[in-house]
Image (cartoon, rainbow, N blue to C red):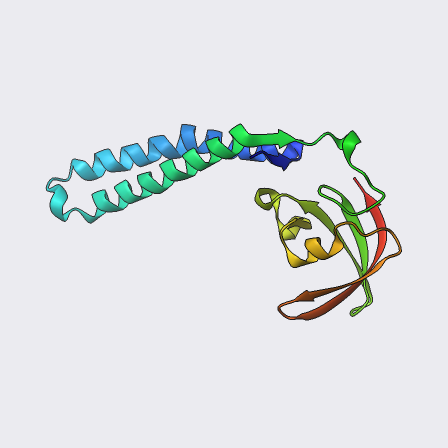
Length: 155
């Protein structure tokens, strides 16, 4: 099943995959070789740790390859800014704190709260999807009830 990404988000995944293959994989191989040279593998904690790290690395590489193979880039011109949807940027007024906040609704793998990118699977995003400028929204989250007014929707 395809997963949708921004061009930037997909590029970040490709960069991570490239780094893992070209830098991390050779580093782990070198660690394994170094640990193997120390002798008895049955009691070699460094060897065991390096092999475990290699397994986790290969799992991540495999997962990234699968994600990238199924990824689809969303054409910006196809994003409807008349309502909140995937890949829209939403300017909100937090009615509880009387301040403004901006979120971009993105796919799970692109989410980064520090950058204001929230996953479409979060309660906040789910509560905003389909809403329009001027709408007031109440969203139940684990810490309570959030109240927002949608001020603007852009790409």
